Image 1 (spheres, one colour):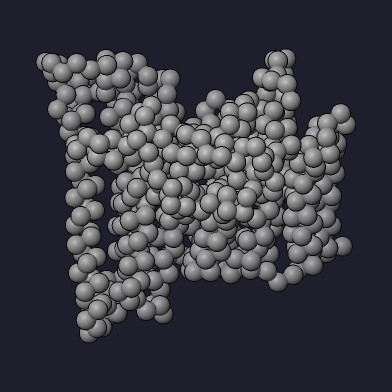
Image 2 (spheres, one colour; image 1 turned 90 degrees about the horizontal axis):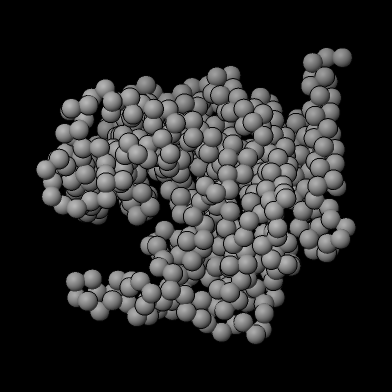
Length: 545
């Protein structure tokens, strides 16, 4: 028996064991003979998709089929985001209740429905007034939400029995919703999904899943385009995008989905246009600037990623744009230059205010009344207690680092009161797949000076995030609360991994790593389901179904 034959037999054996284990888990944990067919079908669909993906990848690996990163990513992303949406259904994500109402509000704007009872005060004209302002929601979508917002595993039964393509005829009128929404510009994708579902007359379950599906669809489309254009790091992006943590964020209502995808778009386009054979035009710069502009309403710190523009060789800016002798390109450059000044002023002003007011301008004789339990460490306090503050900061960084690694890869998923756990071994193996791809998949990497420029953008962003969080550091809360949200750092880690990759084409090692990650995702989903099924063991049900 040669190595190739042994490899093929091993791949088939691993797939067979994984499928059998998944089926055993399904029949012993998910099937409930006392429940309805729709309830059992809800979980059956998850396992059918997982098994189908495994069979597809095994066949491709054993038969040495030709494959491409973009096409395979679309298939894998569709399958695993679908599974993640059912395993971690609506309202399980971070702040997802608020995100859902905000996305619904965005959908109202798309449908031409206005807000009501907004402020008439000239100093804040048109702003939201607590307990007075409202927007309309369909009665079914409004009244069903509290029933879904319960602890697992009861969400599964509610969704399995829910209205997807049909709706409750007696709950089609509009009711007032007085929950203040977040910026509509953050929810353009999920809002479009809700809008389509409402126009098609879907029921509550169909509406709430359609908004999430559009967020997943944006990951699939953006990933496909990125894998078409990226000159390096394709395997790293493929692996990173299929981490449970990223799948969950991009399968929820979180607007961090847009932060991840437009950071990816900016990073991809910068690397693409930096290639000698690709000609740079002024309208290409508009696309790059557009990515930055879209990132700003989500997290203003991502505006610092504009430093990446300089990863495109200056010679290309001169020869392709400045010497183009096309008047409209000069006009575009002028407008873009003005935009840079405006954005820079906004970023600098915001951070100058936060840092100076919350850190440097604080002093013990300040007579302004403050909540002492929330008071941030001042510059004066730091000067007098340097070692104490530095130790406090270092301890916070260590806690933050491991917390964020856990959540970015996906060891813990969901909102802070849930923290559904993925088995440790799955996370470790997936992380090994990512690192193995960087080390063992040989090829050319980006130039060292480009690494410096791209790294500078990442470092500036992390420093800005850290400084912003320093204004919230308090001795009373430092040991109890995580200071930096992991969602801020997902684009940073993702782009770093891509930048460290090579330009290697599709090969068997890369496919084998994807195959291993797929196997780990099967056990990850089973681990999540087991955790959530037993979350309320020994506790009474919140209501009778």
